Length: 494
Length: 95
Image 1 (cartoon, chains in turn brown, red):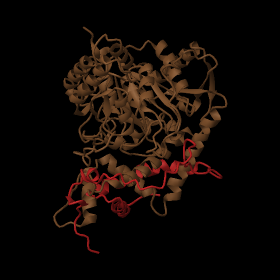
Image 2 (image 1 turned 135 degrees about the vertical axis):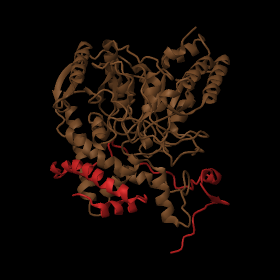
Image 3 (image 1 turned 180 degrees about the horizontal axis):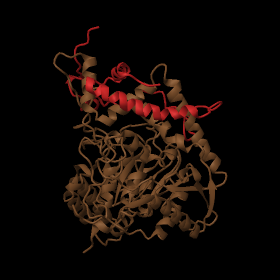
Image 4 (image 1 turned 90 degrees about the horizontal axis):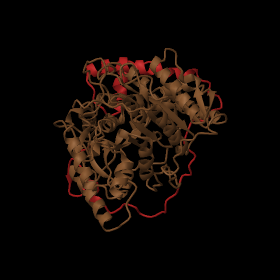
């Protein structure tokens, strides 16, 4: 009997289409795996009935000879940042606990239209603010990975899409949605040895996605291989008149366009990413990645992205500024939590509701954002950060004169232990050092597994491409995947 | 630039977030740590550089000038913590 947890998106889609098995069998098998993996805390809400319902519809369509969608019969996890009609959507916050949207986000609607089914809503860092999934109101997500030292220290699955990464690595689902504001798809993918792509800003509609920092937020797929990412991205992307920054462009046939022959491609290696004191295993993995891309026919060139060191501080002005504005909507009036102390007026109700409803990291970011946007400080902080952002985007523009893609590590370390970085917000922010520049420039960027470190933990290689050139990013990812021989997986301890 | 406890309390007020005295004390150190770190941006020469407005060139679209309220009043009200009839309920406001 087929072990459906071992099948990826393409294998499930093809097996259902060819009649090798029924979509309902897959949904039942994965529903059972989700239900048995509570120790990972990857899901906030499980929706087995949704998965079955979607699968039955696919099986019925197939029996009737109707054409099947790109994701037909594939059960997936949905990050709980996407509004799902009739199913609680919380952004992992207390302030949205019990919020049941009366509408469906465009990206999730696109996936259901393509024949995917929902296994449940995945845990995340609260309002996607975090790099370790330790800011969720619904508890930490645990990575299925453990260090090879015999200890059982629980490790971070990365963040903010930590429920997504943990669930995929534990084979609870073949794929899941993620969102990436400053690395929230790529860093968790790297931490658990899977793949994930953040497309060009504007490819996937933001409509119905709980907003964090609107000029940076971008949805993308996470899965166990590059082909599966390509398939799912095709199903997610597309023009949406309801999002004013949605790109009015056709969705390329990324899966059909996959080609790991990189002859004629120039790969830039940015010297500024080779930080002093870079982890030895990370440096070695990066060198391996260079060798693999060379082997695939690419030419390697040294490049410079001179403003790299300013990306992270610029991000930590711009993202909180936008968050402070976006999160102003949580006021205890229209939806979500209301905390109305006895005899309180409207202003007191706002303040009490927001104090009770937002977690510590969210409150911290709202306050930083409020400060940098306040009268007297706006130009020194916010305007300066947006100017630096222009320079960072210009660095990439200049780099494209001598290369077509950029290869770098995804994160400066392997997964760290839960609680290891929570006492110092800055040390947590620094984990996004390699991921944030591409976010600030709106560029497509992907993480693929690059190997294991000395502790036996996965490391990720990041490929950054030109705007709208997801195909080249996916192709380079495929070239690495075919050469890295990465087959390691977490032992099933849960 | 650094913030003191009064400033933290003022930011909290502007953010409409109630904070306790102890929280304000803790926040002074945290915010100053973060602000001291982001201040390195001041060393970047941005003479003649325009602030970023859109990462990907995109034409702002105009929609047709028609009413689009959607006729979804009940859906809009469905998640209200306190509704009264077809309105959002809030505490009495007397200025």
